Structures are given as structure tokens and as C-alpha cells.
Image (cartoon, rainbow, N blue to C red; front, side, top):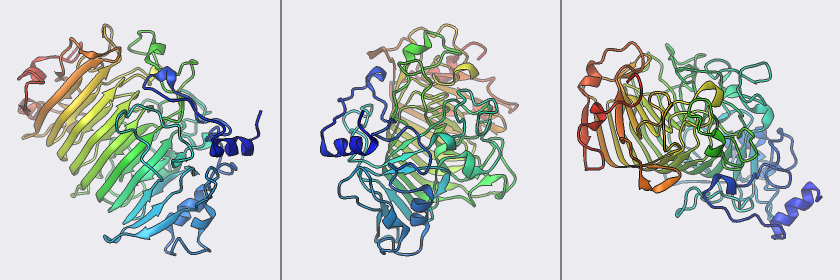
Amino acid sequence: MLSLPLLMLALISGCLSLPAMDSGGSSTVNLMTQGRLGDFQDDGWEGYACSFAEWTSCVNSTTNCNNTRSSCRKCTSKLNPTKEPITCTRSAQGQTQFQFPAGGIFPVMEQFTLPPNTAIIGAANPNDPNDKTRQQTDIQRHTWFIVPRKAALCGDDPWCSDSTSKGKTACTGDPRTHRQGFLMSSNTTLRDINFQGADLGRAASEGVLCGPGAIELPGCLSGSGCDSWGSAANGEGVVSNVQVQNVRLSDAVQRADINQMHGDCNTGEALDDSGAHVRAHQVSVWVAKLPSSEQDKHSNILVQNLVSMNSRADGFNVHGAVRGLTLEDSHIENSGDDCIGVWSTGIENMVVRNMTAANCAVSAGAQSNWGSCVGTYAFQSLAVEGLRCYDPFVDNAGCEARTHWTAIHINKAFDQDCMPLGARLSLSGIEYFASVRPNTPLDRAKCGQCKPCCGQCGDEGFSHLKIDYADSSVPTGSCMSVHSGPGC
């Protein structure tokens, strides 16, 4: 067997190559092995470009990163013969842009807050524009952020419910320790990177969801909310002008396989081909609920060409008030709950455009699978303009309400987040298929409602929800006439 340095040299020189990938779960390979990206090693592993403290100090420093004494100079790629360090430039708009090197592997021990007016930019776009499901295996050409096994929220406990877990819940505790990933500030950019989470299970059942996200916006630690910015919150206030582009999440491992569920819609889990739990982040993008004292909203948020191939909880989840959020040209697959969840009364002018969601609500396992491609609970204005939903079940008999009954399920509330009066929803370009029959429309409704769900809110806002069926892709009136499962 080749030693670690020799394996790395073989990859660099081209003597070793990785097989071409296609979109099937069984065809993906595990890059998290010695000689590739490492086996979720701790911070001091020799394959990392530098330590967590060094690369975060680089981005936080007020000293020019190109200075020979900058910590940025210590962060050189071990998988690139030129051993490029982190470099930086100043844009015309006043943003400091940190260029992370090709072949660089960087540990993520805690949540890192991007300083305002800062960009982290990797070496290349990891997503194939012709097939977003194609696994990225070119280690040398791309930039990688890896959560070590010891830093993960759920450690080596697949259900995150006993003493072997680092934390049973994401609702409390030090947000840095419990939330490995990136916290965005105003005028920040995250672009052209791969990120691999390490959790084996979903954090102990959290009905209100507390994240954490691989990428987050500031807000309350608890999904139930908080009174003000401070110890109960993560971050210091609302943010604006945030861009997340060309990011690939948790696809450096062998993917979840829906065949491993054996037709069990409730507690079956999409394991990998060897029957093991898939290591991944919890939530892909998490917009946390804002403190009750906050009167403003996040604004001008763009998430573009995001690909998440495994997640332990939701894919894209918006629980905080935000004005002008766009999710477009993206793909979310193998989530543990809704691929896209929308549940804040303060969501205004949110657009989901040219989106693909596949095999949603398949990885929660013993904690029960809930969710579909899109679930809405509360918003002021939302437009879905192009959604291709691929359901893991042709036959959804026995599935819980709101789980694989429709591509989109609409609810009156979640907890204390009630659908407000005057809410507007626009739908166009909605398609619904089964994953095993990707070219044949699924014989189930694309949109349905669950009036009893979820919470003690009245149904006045829900009953007066204005739905614009902007084209013929969703039959007029069907969202309110179709029930999305038993009890709805």
C-alpha cells in the first residue's frame, strides 16, 4: 500500500486516476480516504493546507495577506505541485477577496463568521453545468473544506441521541462548537468550493428545527425564537448583499441510496451501498428565525448553483424574515426533511427558480422521515418558477402526511409562525416524477394542502392565501382542493 505522501504524489502526477462518475448513487466513490481527502482527520492532519486557526486568522487579519509574515502564507496546498498559498485582492466595490488554492484541503472545526465585505473564493466551480448530479472527483483542481469527525455535532452516533454525540441538539450551546460551517455577514461571498460535513445522524428530534447549516444567516439559536441578539442568538444583526455561488455540499462520500430504504417510507433510511450511514452536514442553507426585538429583515440574498447531495435534515430552510432572497439554478438531493422549507411570516419577494429536488425526506431514518420537495408554512410573497421534483416512491402508501404525497405541500403555520393575511404564492413550471421513472410524470398531484398543520395558529391567513397558477403546469385550484396526506 502506498504511503500518504506517495499517494498524494501519484494523484498530483496523474499516475492514479479516479473513475468517471454518473448520477447514480451506487456509482459514486468515497473520496474521504487516506491519500485523497483524508478520513475525516482532526485539525493536525498532514494533508490539510493549514490548521483551522491559521486559515481563519488569514481571513480575519487586517494585514495584507500577501505579506510574507501573514498566516495566509502558511496555508499552502499539499496536492498541488506549485504549493500555492491563500492570496487576496481588493475589488473595486471594496470587498477583500481571499483566493483559496487548488488542491487545498481546509479543516472546519467551528462555525466561521465571514467578516463584512469579505469573499472566500475557491479554485474552480465544482458543479458540472450539464449535469449537477455528477460527482466532483478532481481533487487537485478544486478547493475543499472538511469537517473532521471529532468536530461533528453528532460525532459517531448515527442517531445523535446518547453520550457519544458531541451535542444532542443544535438549539442551545456555543454556536461555534455546534455549527460547523460558514456564517455570512453583509457584503460577503462564498464561491467555488466543496464542503463535506461529518454527521452520521440528525440532531435529536427538533420539531422547530435549529439548524445548523453548512451556510447560515444570523438569527436565533433555537427554532422557537429568542428575545434579542445576544447569548441566545448567532451573529449580531441582519445582513444584506450576500452571494453563495457554485458551492457543492457533502458529495465527497458515497451517496445515500434510496434502495436501502426497502420501501419503508417512515423509518427506512437511504444508506450508502455498503449499508452504512452517510456522513453529511445537517442543513444545507439555514436562515434562522430572527429575534423578536429585530424590526428589520435580511435583504438581497442570492444562492446560485448550489448542489447538496446528502444532508441529515432539511436542504434549504428559511425561518428568518428576509426581503429579496433568490435560490436559482440549484440541485438538492437526499435530504432528511423537506428539500426546501419556507416558514417565516417575514419572507418577502422570495424566488425559487430553475430548481431540481430529488429524494427528499429519506435520511432521518429511525426519527421518522417527513417532508417533500417543497413545504411552505408562512410567507408574505413567494414565487416558484421552475421546479423538477423527483420522488423516491412510486407508491406512497403508508407515508406520513405531507411526505411524498405531493411535490409541494402548503400548510397554515408552523409553531407560532402563522401564514399572514395578504400572502401571495405564484407557481409555474412545476414538474413531478419518480426517481426510478425520471421521464414519466408521476400520477400524483403536484400541489396539495394540510390545513391542520402545524401549530395553534388560526387559518385566516391560510384561507385567504392568493395563489397565482401562472401556467398550466399546476391545475388551477388544486393546491387548496388536494389534501397532502392522511389527516390533512
